[in-house]
Image 1 (cartoon, rainbow, N blue to C red):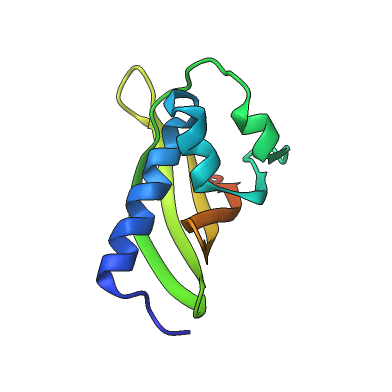
Image 2 (cartoon, rainbow, N blue to C red):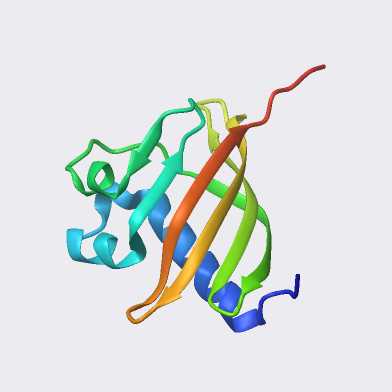
Length: 124
């Protein structure tokens, strides 16, 4: 698969990280970023849809990210992959995950269609 143009990678990375604080976004912004058929498989295996994320929610710990990579799947779809974690009170990384997102380009711009987080288990 071909890589994303740098400007598209920057846009999708920005939108992806914006969604890490979804509970703080105005509902109209969140509705614009999420595809109507959005589905997320969380670290716990719980499945969420757009309606769930549009409900008011309590704040969550900040999500930190690194190692973004991306590729075009079709002319109007892209796959984004990256690592994420949260910081514990002692500064150590916790809830580390590998994340994958599929973004679709539509009439209102790029929207998140699917997202999955897979926990990184330390086997040592």
